[in-house]
Length: 169
Length: 408
Image (cartoon, rainbow over all chains, first blue to last red; front, side, top):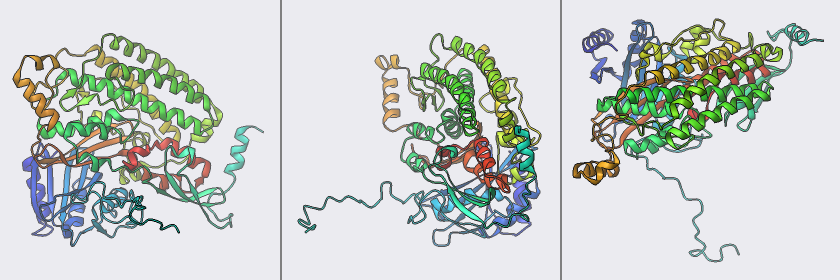
């Protein structure tokens, strides 16, 4: 992990891409997170890739409900030779859930980004094949959002024979 | 005509597609296909017998475990998280507990760490045994399956003895393990590792000189290290291509740095190397288990922080404070400071990472597993493109996806 100072140095370098690129840094439990503006995500990822974080370990979606902007996408990047990890995060609103896809840098981002789209409805612009991956294709809603109810499936067997007697005739 | 003559005839067929003027055919393989190791559906585009494209379709056993975990107190989420990758339940529990312990800044006693290592490595052997047995079955050798499952049975008996369950044991707790090992367990584990090494020799004797196995594995469906890294592939698949990346060595967790073990790597990155790497890992896991048993420290098996771990049963009769702690833990659970952590460990299939976000309550606000099978599955198409459909079956076996982990 870069230490707290190293994280600030990385953030400083990312600000060179665009003055508003970095929205904040978090140093928590010895883990470094740098939050960037969604529009600068791709450029920031390329800069971190050039710094040695060449392996995409994981991609998570997260819903910060009721905070705004609600939806978050986290890319866990790994520098294998230095055994160094950093988390690249971006947050978008439910109304405009667009972030650039990182499939161009890491082909392995394909399935994880599809999962985040499937579960949270984050749209990855430039993704080669953005479809639902775990839920059925015709599923409506994004089940991992915090306001999505558990057990909210429509009831198939309503046993309404008593209300509608004789409907079979 | 010997088998090698067949192979020479096969190799005389050009794979470039120029000589083949057949039209492409798209067929469905699975989800109810025995060689897909679960409910994996592959949409395979074939030209004759040659695979031109593979598209995996997943989600058939998606059960919303991550959503379920958000509705449970941290310690009650362990059993559901364990059920993701159903062949490496200790690893799922370890990743989740590790993430929660990082959030809590909870110290795990040395004895608990060693007990965890012993169970993790036994679980790794068990997972590799299931992989080896089913893979050999896919290649047409049923006897290896019986042998592997005989050893797996012995392992499950050991798990049953230490925790009362054969699978999904819920043995790991936040802060340690639920119980100390019973009397006589260590001796049985030592006896098992001794047998296991001899049995692993036997598997090698059965498979390594088997013409059919060699022809179907050697040189089939290799993939280079750079492509694998781009696809995010980790674990034995990456090590088979020559990259010795193993989190147990690279970023030791759970006192793995106390043990002396080797990381088997391959050279070609073909199916044969994938088989050899996993087979060699069985021996290394046996070594780790032996060392951990020999150096098992004395002391508590779970943290003595009463805010996290349940007090011992006998204290409840005499101590009011213990009773209150017990009541609070069982009804509400412990609260976790707000924050987000990612805790990666080396599972039998690669990097298993658990991301946990806490909002300060006693239930996780988000649990996400970076399951290695889910990511590794993306390598199916690059591996098998322009190879025979029979090699697709062999590659799928060597890929070792567990669909419970893929779909979660």
